[in-house]
Amino acid sequence: MTVTAAGFRMLFRSVPQDVWIVTTRDADSSPVGTTVSSLTSVSSDPPTVAFSLRESASVLPQFLAAEQILVHAVSTEGIDAARTCAEHGADRFARVAWQTGLGGLPQVDGAYGCLLTRVTRTIPVAGSALFICPVQATWIPASAGPPALYRDRSFNWRVEKSTDRST
Image 1: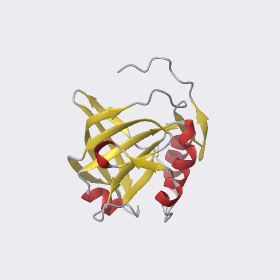
Image 2: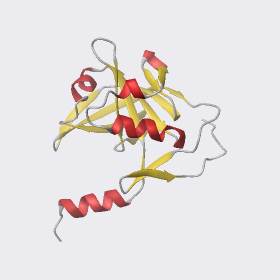
Image 3: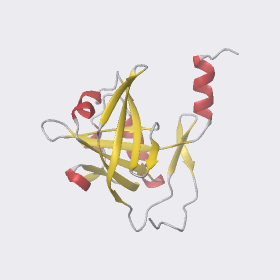
Image 4: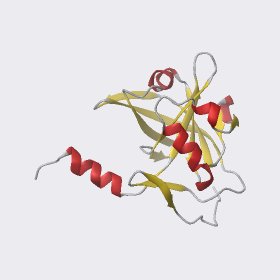
């Protein structure tokens, strides 16, 4: 059996992925962010997540220098923000509604919830940087739309909202 890049991409493109926006601040305290679908839970004790950014990502240097990152689970209300943050070369924070959130980091409107993380390790993997981030705090709003999903190059997927939002 041969592994092909086309087959790999087709499979991952067909399976719905959760949508995440990661934000931090650059050396001048300006907001920096991007959309990722590569976020995964590594451990629940201690709570730890991991995500990757391509080496070609314009925001990679700012994230490599970051001590903390705010991770946003995007709700269906935040799909436009996710689209904007996914654009290459876009002035994302000129077009996305946001405020200062956990850890003083940019918090994008339309989040289903947020995780304040600390970057403890980055690992180069196949043209990407893998970020390992223990969670320092969580924020879940009292009300938010259901989580957004990305499938087949479209953000037009959703899951029904759970009624149990207890932690």
